[in-house]
Every structure is written in structure tokens, then in C-alpha cells.
Image 1 (cartoon, rainbow, N blue to C red):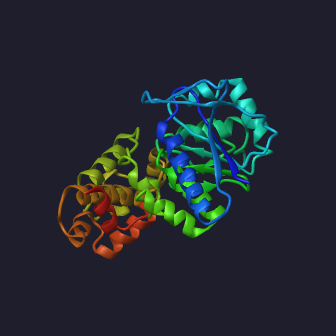
Image 2 (cartoon, helix red, strand yellow):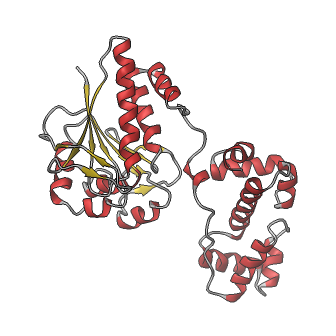
Image 3 (tube, helix red, strand yellow):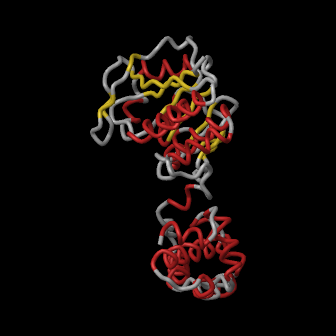
Length: 320
């Protein structure tokens, strides 16, 4: 018997949050039929069965929400700019609450995580969402531990959360692999011209980090000195001397004002400087490493992998 997959639609939904998983599950069904096993019955549903108008103007035909106690395998909660209005629709949220105990799994994509959160499905869990939406989700739902880096997370035994937009495809492929095996998922990924498991997390796709400004002038001056010349030594002793503070007092004040210790701040600024140079220049990685204060290409690589989840070479191939 085919596994029933319900993809929830609402006004202003992100089109690819819906269409990406839809294509993965329907592609997997074609594979399943070819090898004589059950696939998926994929349906787009909305509260009153009205057509779903996406944020880009594409309109999708939808069915009415089915009985939440019926046989449901997977529920997909997409995101988009319409999520804020959708979370205030009592009929929609009540249906999510009612269907969750009966579904084998509930999946959110992008800011669809707020629908899962509104329904109480993520309390006490680790969840991810689009990197740009992560601070808002963490602020509004403090019972959730929000990790903005993974492409997707198994938040609980029955709930999965995915990062922004195309990450819904990554997660759907992982679910197909769980259900039908690696051959099925690899076949679908190959057809979509995608990695079965893409390297790194979503931090590599995020905008360069905005550095918070300290209120105190000496600390702000230290920030500006670090950012103006990332390759300089920037020892705690030297930064403290410029700020007319003891190293211990400077470290405490800097951390209080900026939100991280001076050494971590220097490292963050250097990684951002290296990111820009990898994107904009053809200089060898070793030259960029020396220029940005890492000394060697290996030190740059270790810092890059720790902060962005990918090596400098792979980052450059993706974003140059």
C-alpha cells in the first residue's frame, strides 16, 4: 500500500518548499514501481481545499484537509512569507496538532518550522530552519534549541526539520533512503542532478556575518582595528594595551559587549575575510591564509571546516 504524503499549502507559501519534496517523493514512486515495491501517494492539501497561491504567484491545485485520524505516513509543513498568517489560522494549526500523533512523521521545511513549533511539536527538541529565520524562531520559542547550521535535523522520533528552501529536497531524499534504500534515493538524486548528501551545512550559504558594535569606545576601536587588518597579530595583550585596560579586564569587557571572547572574534573576522577573498580572487589558498592571519593553509582549512562545514577549496568551487 502506497505511503500517503500530505504537503500542506497556504496563501504565500514558498513554492519550492512544496514542489521540491513533491518531486522527490513522486520520483521515488516511479522507482518503487519499477522494482515492484510500494511508493508514495503524494497530495497537496489546504484548509478548505482552495487553490494554493505561492509567494511567487504560482497557483497549485489542492484538496481539503483529510480526517487527521486517517492513515497518514508523512506530513510536510512548508514555509514562506505566508507562514505568519498561517500560524494564526486556528483551523490549520488545530489540524497539525490533531494529525501529528497519527502520522508516522511530520516534516518542516524552512520557516515551516514555526508551524511545527506553534503546534507544540518541537518543545524540548533541537530544530533547524532557514539561517535568516533562526534568530526569530529561537526568540519566539525558547523551549526549542535552534541550530542554524544543519541542512536538516531529526528533531525527535517523529519530527524532522529542514533548513531553507532547497533543503526540503535534501530531507526528502533522506526520508526516501530511510524508506526504500540508498539505491532509490541515489536514483532520484541523480535524476534531479543533486548530491544525495551535500557537503557542509547551510552556514556556507549565509550572508557574511554582521559584527555587533560595542557600546564602549575602546572596545569598538578594538573591533575596528581587527576588521581593518585581519592579518595582524591582534594578541590580547596588544588589544588591551590599546584600550588602556589589563588583559583580563579587557577580555571580560569585550566579551560582555560583543558576545564572544576577543580570540573568537578575531577568528570570525579572519574567516569572513578569507571567504571574501576566496569568492573574489584567484590567489592560492596558502596566500589567502597568510594574508588573513592564519599563517598556513592547513590552519585556514581547520578553521573553515569548523565554522562553515566545508574546506576552502570546496567553498571556492561553489561560490567563486
